Image (cartoon, rainbow, N blue to C red):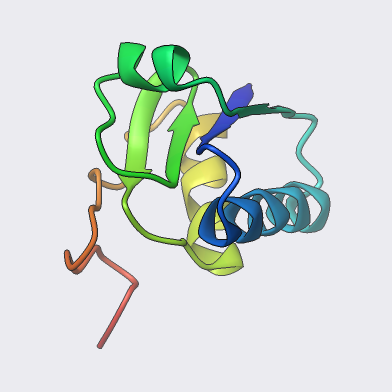
Length: 99
């Protein structure tokens, strides 16, 4: 599994990368984590707002910092070959975000 964190290096992007590393460690995943900061590469994913989280080439979250628990759920779903939660952008409520 390839997990990519897209963002130019802002604080939210760095926090997302930290959350991804923590989620990978806690889930016991052998996922490869890559941080992408080049705007051209970010735009190639169709992402216009960062941070963004990409798993195996599919954008899963854009425009907000996901929690460690949310990332672990996405990793688990992807590892089982299931459909990961829908893409969430800034201001969206994605399953598990809020009650």
